Each structure stands twice: as structure tokens, then as C-alpha cells.
Image (tube, rainbow, N blue to C red; front, side, top):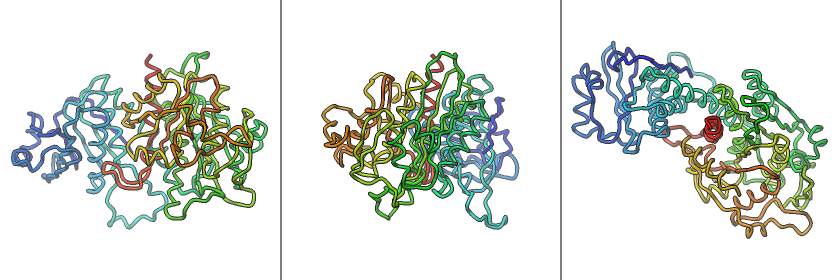
Length: 493
């Protein structure tokens, strides 16, 4: 995806474009600049608004076909009655980009009247989200049967430093989300633990980061029995990848981002039902989110220290796989009774949380497609947010809201701990179906020592099994936006 930002105050009517998209609010009216666009269309836009054929409702669109010069097509996109935030601009721009893709215009100009720098950031994010695709493994039809992919978006906005910065930020986050989406969309035989090593090295080289890679032997020396028990059923080499971005003072405590990277999750011996198991290629979305966030942070050159840590493996049933009833020991010495081998993500994260302590985090946030229970509780619209430090939780909630990845806080009361008590070990890896997302978070809390921590359960939001309208089914890019927004907010302090 290539973006360009027109840095003049040129009127939309002066644009020579295969498609001009205009985002309008509920019950719109045309200003002078947009009336000039309507002149070659003989007033068709104004008549459509007056007759209420187009009302500006959220996701509403109407297409007008013009001549061979100027705007050859004009697309009206409704953004509804909500205030013009980054998230609102993102959604409307994504709708415009998807329509451009269906038309096969290849390029689009987009104007959003009244947009400030924050909304312009949303425009960049939305244009990228609406045009994103994963054609890597598909045989392409003949050129004459193809519709051109949307490759160029020009945003019409003011030539100000704030607008420039907003668009640059949106483009940077969009690049990070593209990495997370591509990793998520890859089949499990293409996205392997080694893929995260390769992508991590590319990011590190691009942005001058330090990278550390651990394999099975190194993790054994670290006594990561919790992580390694998940990997013992697969011949693939498990990988822990840590990326260190040093944009702040040498003695500044970093923000540490941690991601679960199950490249495929069969459930292990506690095998999942066969229908829809193919979606378990997305069980690495937390790790993909960390990689995407580190790319965006590197592009933004933020004056802050950040560490990204991911743990990648595959959960498979085999003759060497961990079994229900087995007891393993994590790197902090705690023993864990395996009740359900499908509760494996928390076993990987346990050792990652212990590993994170060596960086002396100012704040650590982990993200994982951890539980089906959070999908039952919150559906596909909110991230489950957990933490004992209220200030840290509030900070993450604010970041998610600003990024258009809203979260909802859930409790970590001691009463729930009874469900993960074991008769033979320090704790169990599953507390059963009741409050499953809460007991999973409480399990993780047992491996946090001496630093503020927040857990994000993104099982309902990192990917979608249905078309959401503004983006197609598949990966959403969550939690890249939340991660980046937290780091940006701290960098501004």
C-alpha cells in the first residue's frame, strides 16, 4: 500500500482522479468546496442529499459517475452522527477503500471535511485496513479479468505540521498492522516459530534494534519448563524472540510488550473439535501484535525504551506431548499441574513474564488469544483487560479507546484463585469453564514479580470469522494500535 498526502489546500474539485471519496456526517450539507465537485455532476449529489437518497448514516455509500477528466467517479461515504474521532475516520476511510477495491480504480483521493490531525491519522489507518489483502498463496487470474488493487491513496488536507504528523503516525501504525495481519493470515505450515525469528531480524535491522533469540536448548538452561512442555509434542524448534528498542535514556525503564505465539493450536492431547480448527492459525495474534507494534514504534522513532518479547511454538498431539495430569516447573520455580493441554498459551506466557523481569519494566503488557471464555463474555467488540494495578489498567483502557480497540476491565478477585489450586502442585493450568478468562489471568499473575502488569485477552478481537463491513473476515490488526498508543502516550510525558 502506498500513501501520499496532498500538502496544499487544493480544492477537491481540482483533483484529477479515478475516484474521489468524500466522507460526510449524518444529514450532510455541502460546503462551497464540495459544491464545486457537484457542478460537473449537474447537481446530482445535492439532489441525492435533498431527497434523502443519501443520509450520511454509518457505512452508507453512494457512487456517482462523472466524465473522463477531474473526478471520474465520486463516492459518498457516511460516517454517522458520532463525533469525528480517529476510530470514526478509520472506519469510514476503510469503507471507501474497500469500495475502491471493488471498483478496481487502483488509486483514490479522499477528503474528510472538518478532519483534525487525529482524524487524518484515522484516514491513513482506514485506507490501509480497507485495502489490505493476502494474495500470496493464490494463483492470479489473467490480467484482463483482474480488477486493479488499491495501491495509492491521496488524502486532501491542510498543509500543517500537525496534519503531517498525524498522517505519518497513521501510516506507521498501518505498516505495523500489515505485519501483524500477514503473520496471522499465513497458514500454520507457512508461519512457523522460525518465521518470527526472520521477521524479528528484519525489524531489528530496519530500525537499529537489538534482537535476542532463544531455542529449545537455551530455554532449557533458563529452566523454562512451562513453555517447553507445550513444545515437547512438536519437532519444530520453539523460539523466544526479544526485540529491544532504545529510544530513551540509557537508564530509563522500558515498556515491555509480550505476545503469545502459538503458530497453530490443535489443543494437544486435549484435542479441539475438528470443525473450524483451521482458525487456530490465528493463535499467534498476540505475538503478531508485538511484532507489528515494534515495527510501528521503530518507524515513529519514539523517545522511549521498549522491549517486545514473543514466545512461538506449535501445540500438537504426539507420543512426546505433555499429558493431562503431568506436573511441570516454570522458570520461577513454581510447579503447575496440567489439567487441560489446550490451556497452553498461559504456559508459554508464564515463562515469558518471568523472562521480562530482567528488563526491569516500567510497565509490562501481554496480549494473547487466550480464552474462548472472553468471547462468550465480551463477544467480538471488546478486549478483556486484567490487572491489579488500577492506574496501569486505566492507562491501557484509555490507549485502547484512542486506538479504536476498546477494552473492558474484568476482576482479579482472590475468590477466583480457589479454582486454580492443585492437590499435587502449586497451581493448575485450568480452573474449568466458569470465569475461564479470569482464572487464566490469575494464573498469569502468579508469574509477575515486582512490576506493573496488564493482561489483554484478544481472543474475540484479534481476528473475525465474519466480514465486519469495514474490514473483511480474518485478522483485524488488534492489539497493534493499543500497544503503540500506550508507548506514544508515555513518550509524550
